Length: 140
Image 1 (cartoon, rainbow, N blue to C red):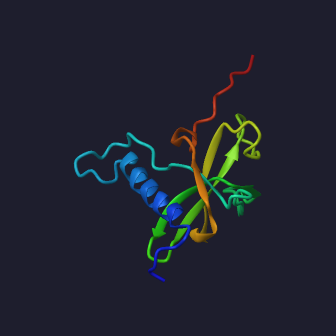
Image 2 (cartoon, helix red, strand yellow):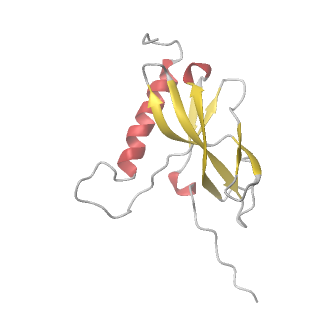
């Protein structure tokens, strides 16, 4: 199981992504305890033919589908990762497809373990999308 996989580049890319995600969140610092950074670099996984999708439940108990994830942990030796599902929402906070007008990506407690040898590429997205505050609309 410890051998180099043919598609090991996605595994190495996600290992680098996790390192950068930790640096962004300031987890590695001893003396800085304020919440300056972001703790998620959202990404999309692709097999080369299609994007990976997963199904989960929102914090309100509603069903959703997503193709955007957060890396929680990686096992480089086995070339697998634990990823959590991010829920795409519009400017009003309603769930949408990634093809629609995504305003924010909500974190959820849904996680899956994936075999990274099944994927050919990953596409990182802006950390600013994660848990972005919805605008307050004042009534007229």
